[in-house]
Length: 416
Ligand code: UD1
Image: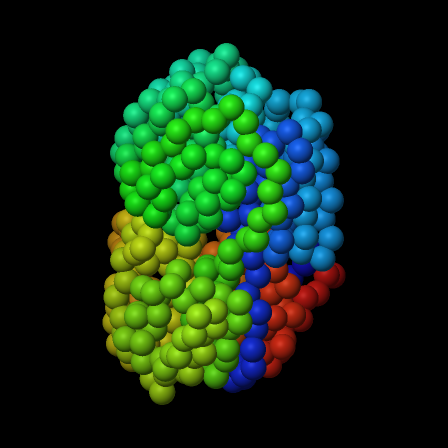
């Protein structure tokens, strides 16, 4: 099993190119299943999750080719309406096949995702939403079976603006008969990208970027060429590294997607310059303790909570980080404490007492973003840190050790 070995404490300098967004490309790949023809995607990140989604598309019968960041998906050959447990359990985003396949073929069988490293992560909003569109949902042998002759538009109001449920219901609504209105919809940039891509493919979606999405159903979608937006979470991770240790520039990113993080980094003492698609950051002389509460977009993203905590671990005082989106997403805290951090957890609130420096130690990845925080901790720490179970990081960060090496970090991958 691969591990990463980091000798920390070196300053970061240089430029890094941000990859296409994982959370944008996965629903775009499943949206391609709604087309009786070819969809091409550019700037597709080569990630474990992208490759898992390719396997899933292959299982359902779509033809996929992927080379040098460009992917083409042929939805005309889809012939197997099932997402098996083996894949869904390794990647929850497999659930994104539910809406598209049901809407186009009237039937789909998708394994329930089950638990994950940080909590139950239910799918009730997805299922209730599809029922509102007229689907009959049954559970058999751990699988959701959804059926409908043709979905019918309806009004759906989510209890919480779930990203995945919004994506699934938007895709289902696009091919439903009549009007679908989603209230309390997610507004994350990845949802905006999905809606705009669907419109390019012939859908009629209004209210994009608002919490009320209105869809006029169409009979079919057509082929399209799509560009994947930059990964704001990858960008945020490199920015946090820069705030602690660097003088670096991020290219091919979208500063507008990172406004709250940039504001918080400035409060913490970093110096930041932005242009339309790049961000430069210089480290803070000392890190000011800066509280953060995660919220849905445009609030501070839960996917950067773990990385923010590690920055606060070396701040000059105490700070508080609260996660209101996922209440139990804190598996990184005991690992960061192994690096000498002083972090206590009370329910969904982390209380961080800054220490002078972190010290390298063996630690273990538990999920994608927790792994990212451990790599940041290792880069900041004095001495050597061995990070095991890095397959988690490979799910969501393209070439992470190569990108950090190019910024001057002493980081190597070992397999022994
Ligand atoms: C997506 C992102 C993930 C990010 C999360 C929140 C992808 C592939 N993943 O996950 O990286 O951390 O958004 O920004 O895009 N909920 C329910 N019932 C449901 C669905 C969600 O109760 O049916 C709750 C969840 O438990 C959670 C909250 O809603 O507390 C937000 O979850 P959601 O936005 O759905 O996250 P995902 O789409 O799974």
